[in-house]
Image (cartoon, rainbow, N blue to C red; front, side):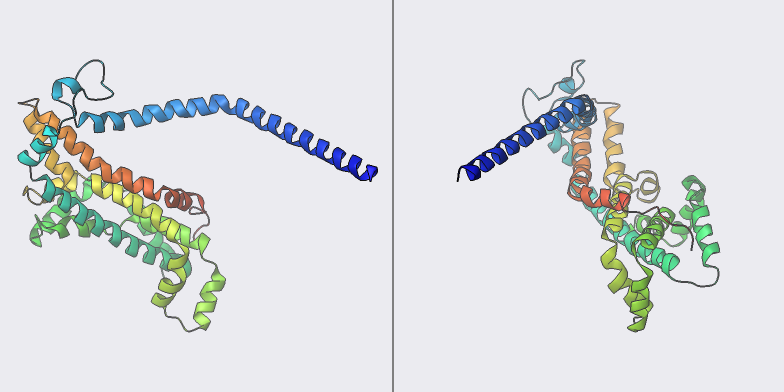
Length: 306
């Protein structure tokens, strides 16, 4: 009995010593990493401050925004900035235009790029490698080169001041095709393709039932990049959409910017519009960042042309 008690006591003592050693080791690691955490916290504050000041500034008057010392909070929270925004431009309609165009571009790019990437990665057909190299070559062309011929084409089709003039040219993204080709080549085993062929699946059935369930992280990464690019697009929508009722948010806000050159009070509405226009981007990234990071770090750039 005494031996059992002494054995349990020794075991308890050893356990306490082990826990104390682990605690000291953990504390030592935290102390060693403290400078890194402090540096990351400082960088995070520097990155987040412009966003904070933009959202807070949307509730301030212009003199309060343009002071030498920035105000972290407004002296008086007021909504006149948003009233000016909706009074001077049809911001509600322009927000709807941005939503429709961005949703159309994002969904179209996801479907077409994943389908093309699946074709390049897992099927063999004559000229496949040459066609893929041609797709990569188009990534080297500056976007400005295609502006004039695309403008003339949209005019001939009578698509100006139409959603199609902005959505259709953006549906084919060489980078998205390249990204999805590399991602699918790494993520989709050939054994699943052979099993689908044995089961008699067609090409599109294999894409729908075998490929799509495996690649949501890659789709999320391309979806976020496409959403941000489409929402922030300015030059092409500026050329195609000159009707205020068809403009997107970035184009519509230029009217307030032009008015601010004559009356600084227009900056109040401009800051409010910028804050409202940035909010969807922040929400989409916060809600989807886990899938975005997974898509970028799970082998999307592995493999070569097969």
